[in-house]
Every structure is written in structure tokens, then in C-alpha cells.
Image 1 (spheres, one colour):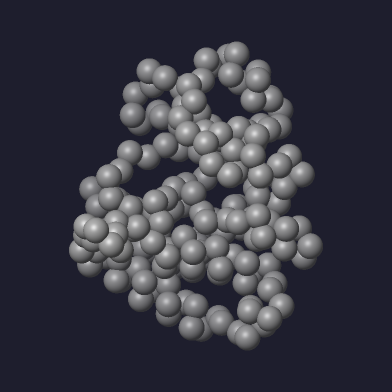
Image 2: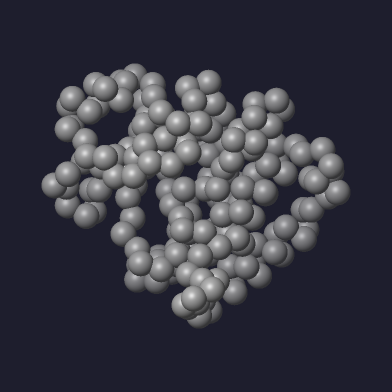
Length: 186
């Protein structure tokens, strides 16, 4: 497994932006279809939490895959590479994320597919919700919470791709440190 430093020497990465989970970088001069985002784990997403993050991420992918109503409307990409202290995922270029639907200054009208996705997601959740999800979270309730935050709450990392797949793409699921800590405990 490579380290971020080894990857950086190899690819000469360019800093993109930072956030609480770590600094993000990209590889300059790649064609759009090959662009990736590299998250260096130099923030609150620590090396100790990385295995839980990867496991939760992959379990969310499986959850979407086995729930055909959600899968019909939602796409979340697989991680491309996991290093010792970094994660590589696809990079998407988009202008309108779901947080623009609720922008207080200039809200945009959601696509009709947004309501279809919300209805499909709600139908799956109504059939699976139990009170224990709130009072004593299980691993499945953590997955449901992350998906609710990723799909229902307005956010900058979920957008509609209407040209090729006609689905909402979750660029990066809304996983919190609390989610990871609870995931590790189960």
C-alpha cells in the first residue's frame, strides 16, 4: 500500500481544497473522463478510522445495490484506490447540487426525478424503519442515516446527472465522525 507522500512524488498532485476529513488534491492535466480526487487523511478522518470509513462506504454501496427502488434513482461510485493515508474517488464536474434547491437567495426548482427519488427512498425507509434506529443505532440504522443525510438533506455533494444515467449521484456520502465511531463499536 502506498502512502500519500509516495503518490504525491509519483503524480505531482495539486491541492484542491480542504475540509474536516482531510485535504483534497487532483492530478493536473488529465482529461475530464480520467479526473480523480485524492483525499489525504490529514484531518479528522484519521488512520484509525479509515478501515471503518471504507467498510461503511462499501456497505452503503451494497445497500443501494440490493434495494432496487433506491438503485433506480441513485448512484454512488466505488472508491478507485485506498492507500495507507489517502482515498481516491472519481471527480465529477457539476453546477447544481441539491443544496441549490433550497438556497435562500436563489433556489432552483428540483428536477422531477428528485421527487421520484425521494418517494422511492421514503418507500424503502417506511418498510424498514424501527424505533431502535433512533434509540439504539445498529449498523443498518447508521447506513440509513447516512443515506438520509446524503439524499434528503440539501448538500453540495449530491447532484442529478441527467445526460447519461438519469440518477442522483452521491459524490461522497454524508458520513460523520459520529457515524464512524458508532460503526466501529458495533
